[in-house]
Image 1 (spheres, rainbow over the protein chains, first blue to last red):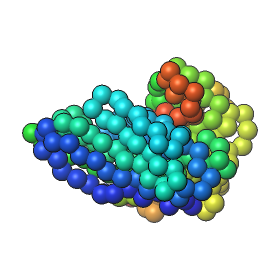
Image 2: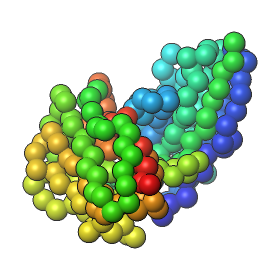
Image 3: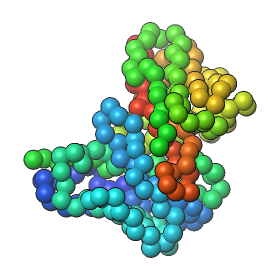
Image 4: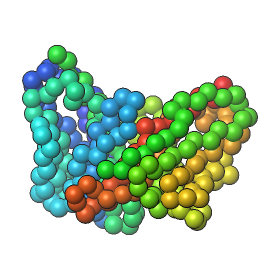
Length: 113
Length: 119
């Protein structure tokens, strides 16, 4: 089992503040790094799929970077809003595990007005 | 993206009974589906990969006779927890393997999960 670690486990953010958190993973056999957003009682929703070292992707106020050589990805939320409150999961795909993903335990983000 | 419906969202059953969880792909033909289990404050753990028309592939340590998976059509996969016991109480969630909207990468589309409580 691959060790995909997310930190912190949870964080509280004031509305309007920006925040970021980390996903670290073993860099061997890297294929893709996924980020999902999971709101309570809903389905996890794909945010980004990142495959190239140095990749940076953006969706609205949320962006992510990827370093495959050192095995980490950052997710950034700019100007947090209450609707950004969710658990953010990262998941690793490797070249020897077609289609399958190894998930981290998630970072729970709570944005307070 | 694909829409995946999972039912029921919550089930409470007595020890020794069997529970069936359905995972439907509503607008997409799902050749491959995945079943995960999540314990509190832990990550989603893959239990098995379900392929339409063939036997599921189980991850190491997952009892195939305990967790029966059927994927008889391109839109439906079921997970049956047989003779459930309190230690089977957990959160179970399915996903289908699909293509990223507007992109080429494979991603997973998830159901909303099933909370199983065995008394």
